[in-house]
Length: 187
Image (cartoon, rainbow, N blue to C red):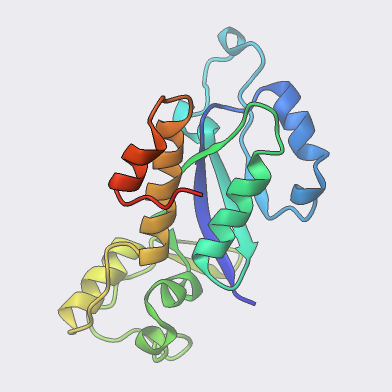
């Protein structure tokens, strides 16, 4: 089963109680989802993490599709009191395997282990024998070589829009008939 790497955005930074619940939740026991916890007393630290990263969960999840992977983590996040998913995104930094997954293995097949074709982007960085590339650079190269690569995969767009809509509707008083008129399936 493929592994999907993405960043799930949550409604708030995790507090100590939520982090404890997260750490003891069976749904996250495999380590496929991680978080950054801010300091308890931020005023005591000269350097703080970027506030945006405190509302992100790094995910490497096995599932049949990207949409299934995002849905699985979004569902499991609701097991943590007060926490819910509000969006999803891809990071720009990718390995060749992640880039191949985003655009189709056939497009990047010749690159792995056989040298880079003319104009293919150089790695941005490397660690532990793994090279990291800019997805935007790879997508631009693919476009220059005649391949059509969407800015974002359809599954990612669907998941992000669904999570953002669910967040916007949370607590809103919108009649079911209005939602149906907008084309939303209402159970």
